[in-house]
Image (cartoon, rainbow, N blue to C red; front, top):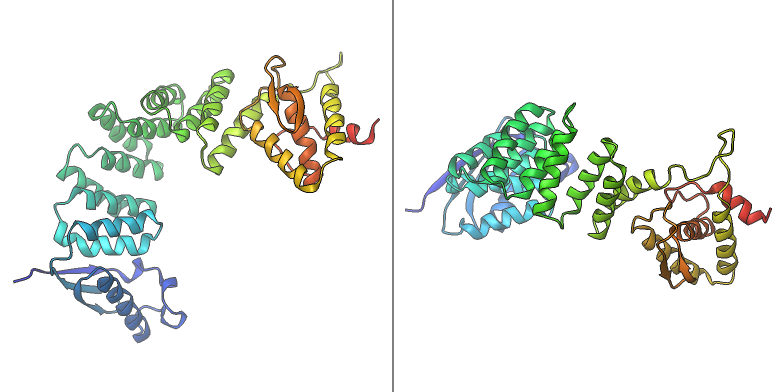
Length: 362
């Protein structure tokens, strides 16, 4: 006889935006019909035979294991989570859970998704089950620690993450999570740097870790090391948001003391920047709009290397600029190009005074 399973879901856990506008009020007949259709569709899509009963307080799903609730369906449910469909992925993992109650990975994936949804108590129940079933499930341990960190329960998080790194000293993600949590705690920046440096040594191709290491070193006042970490992050071609933070970190330092000061301490203009901008404006004025756009793109890509504006020795070759270019020439030309294309664009450094002088020819 095929085994049968029954699970109960809370109506409050449903994303009612998935339902027709006239069926979003729990306790109504329209709500019951819409929810029944929604979950019945899920069951059918996963090849499961079952039924759905909806009351004001509870959704009951009963289904029979017809041999199709195996690993492939678990993978499909996890794939939904990875694609960002948390509501359906969580729902299907909960439906499948009774037939895979001893599967540590099911509990880990369900717990991780619930933590992302900020349902921390329920998330920790499943993460704890995953660890009980597999004490060496490092991902579950790491995620459990991070669930406490997300609630700002840092001491609880550190207890778990330190134990995680002891159990798996060669796992970079445990060290990254530990370092990322320590940096949020008062007086623990040096400990955070140690943990993040360990993670970087174990997984040197992780741009997120290098960003975090750069930010911690910046907070510690270690300017050169922080810039090195930000540059390393950028070489790994991180996603846009990470890249922007790394570039901002570099610019915060390379842009400091950009202008010389006179004897009264008043900032003077960077006349080398004015010269470079005049040269660039002359060249850009002979370009078509498309050629100017390509030049701006090349200059921006060069800027992502993390140029040090205080370094006048290192030079670069670009197609849009003749000869060898210093960091200051590249940044000045980039500023001019973007002001021509999109006036007022913030390129991470303020050369507006130099640009006005270069434009007016004064």
